Length: 380
Image 1 (tube, rainbow, N blue to C red):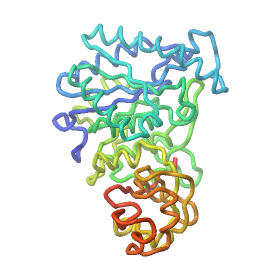
Image 2: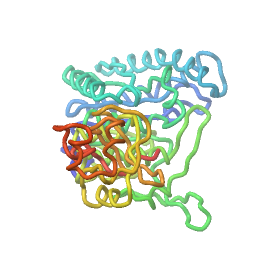
Image 3: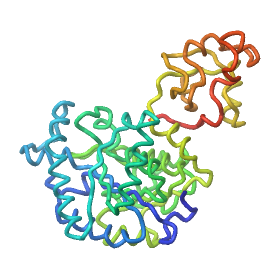
Image 4: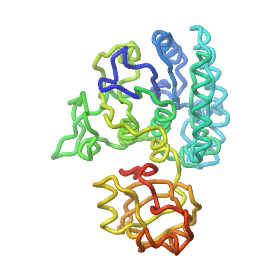
């Protein structure tokens, strides 16, 4: 679990570094192999004392370069084809650069869907742990060839946040083509040159300082980075957004130097199981609750009782991950349902003591127990 300072050398024992397409490429879009070598050199400098994971973009860009394309394709099939061509090329560059500096790398292809099952999440945890034991640097990319959603959204920022949760990292360092989060002028809405150095709590007001953007080769922007920071800090990690071309940015950040924008970790970071509930899975169905249940869940850390359920949307089994929404449709939490959708439908609106008569004895007295429940904002 991360400490409150998040960036001191003694505190950072496991770091996830995310590098985006625009940082990895030249202005003309070609993959910058010299920069990849510089990444390897910096990671080698911090590697003896800590575990390092590198989350990389660039597979689609590498495929575009090999196929002679000047503009990023728009169709999903073309994006998948370029990713398929580029993934091997990108890893070849990483293998050579890291080998030159005496390190071994491993390609890890992940999607949110692949982490949706608890067993898949735990398998990923064990695989990363084994790689760390071998002294290997995992290089993670979205499996763009099959993951439609991940191609459309995130620019790997959200993937980096999920990896931070999976490996229980102390720090997520997002290397970007900007030097951090800048203030936005309240009147014009324009981004100013005033850099926000530290964010103790990522509030809605801070999120408004983000501006979405896209580049020729990549997708995403500051908004996606802020959403990723929101999730990673809630998992107990510090997050830093810094310029990827700042000299020796990685060892300097790890040594505690104030670079970019630092987001402090939540001191009450979620435990491992709740991290998975909150961030990794895709909810199978939705349980809609009334105002009283919403108040109990969000204000009093209560379990969801059947009396507070208004309706059920979708079909799910007992133990499945479900979204919990208020009557306006806003998702207020996620949790593991103790009952199937059909059973929730039968017990909704009833008191807990009625459950045995409605669906049988020995099933418990809550729909979602608070130990399997995470309340918060899960809107993308």
